Each structure stands twice: as structure tokens, then as C-alpha cells.
Length: 297
Image: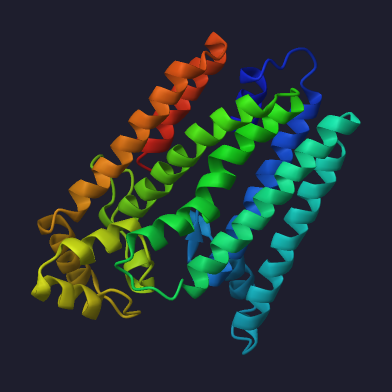
């Protein structure tokens, strides 16, 4: 969607075959990234169904090699999705100049996601209360690949210049950050409408999120000690998770995290106001901005 909207915003007209092939390639790229992410996090599910490595593990039943083979099989499935993504990209039928720009952006996106994933898995050598470290992970792992690069790839297919690419960076990075920060909030607190229930995944993993960094920064000494004791425990129970949520509420971390999302949403609107994109593209981008910052499931 973002890729096609980027194409329209940059003046793309006529036959949309090329941009649709690039957009389809992005869908397979996202599948690759999510499958590998679930392996590294050992996530139980993805979009309401068993994660690929868990599904393959289940097929092997009581085989003592089930866990290793399930992870290995899912790794190959993810690699296959990336291979197909590259194959689709090569069928986009772009002229020489546009082809070089599109492939350059795509390569940059791959590198950014790999680096962001590395930071997420290995940590940055800083404490979980390091807000800038948490934001850096988001920028590389999520913001660029989720919003900025898809918009730029669509624009590149349309032959956009540097000014349009810069606008998509100005709106893509804050919107991508807001999207991931919202996801981290939903994982811990769920959504008010009940569409997303509070989870234990990020808390058990001890994931270095903006929410946790703010909680540790804003909590008093006793609250900070409880957070450090509870977050990251693989055996964390719902009663203990409720205590963590209460501390994040009482310290103001949840409210401040919401304010970070709002400030980025307003920043994106200011960029759109100044950009003067074609009306249909502008409407679509504003709708996507709402979706990315206020989704509940």
C-alpha cells in the first residue's frame, strides 16, 4: 500500500505493473523478516496462527530433534521468501536509471533491517533504561523498512527526485517510530476496545522497548528494583505482569509513551501540510498515518 501510494504521490501514472511488482516484492520481504524475527524471539504465534517454526516443530511430534529442525526449516522458509522477493523485484521492468535507484534503496532497506535486528537480539551494551538505544533499534529494524523505504521505492519507480525522497524520510521515520511504539504498548497493555489483549511476550523477553526505558527512568527506587526483578523472567505470571503494568502506569511511563506517539503523528501531519502531494495521495497518506498510530490489533 505504501509503495503504491508513494508512486502516486510522486506523479506515477498509467500502467502500474512495475510498481505493483515492487510492492509485491515488499510483501514477501516482510514475510521473510517476520519469519526470522519469530525464530529469534521464539514467538508462539503470528497473526493469530502458529509461527512458522512452531508449526514445523509441531509436525515432528515427539522427535527429540523437533525444536532444532523446526527452527532450521523456518529459517529456510524465510530465506525462500527473500529469494522470491528478489525475483519479483527483478521482474519490475524498470529502465536503467530507475532500476539502479530502486535496487539501491532495496539493498539499503535490507542492510537496515539486518542491523536493527542485530541490535534487538544482541542488545547495544547499554542498560534497558537507555531511551536512545531503544529508539535506535526501532529506527533501523522497523521505521525505515515499514514506512520510509516502501514510500521511497514507489516514488523511485515514478522517477522521483531527491526532494521527494527527503520528504518521505521526514514523514516515514517518525511514523515508523510511532507505529512500533504503539505495537510495544499494545503488547503490554492491550487495547481499550479489547481487540488486542495484554500479553506477556515482551515482558518475559525483557525486550528493550521505549515503554520499558521510560518506566525505568521515571520510576522511584523501589519501583525500579521491582521492574528489574520481574521484567525478563521467562516464568513471569499474569499476576506479576499486572504489577509491572501498574508501575508503568503509576510512574507516568505509559502516558508519556502515548505523548511520544502523538508528537510523531503531529510531526507527520506538518510534513504532509507542506508537501502539497496530489489530493488522492495526500488523503491516502493521512489515512495511513491514522492507521499506523492508532491501530488496536
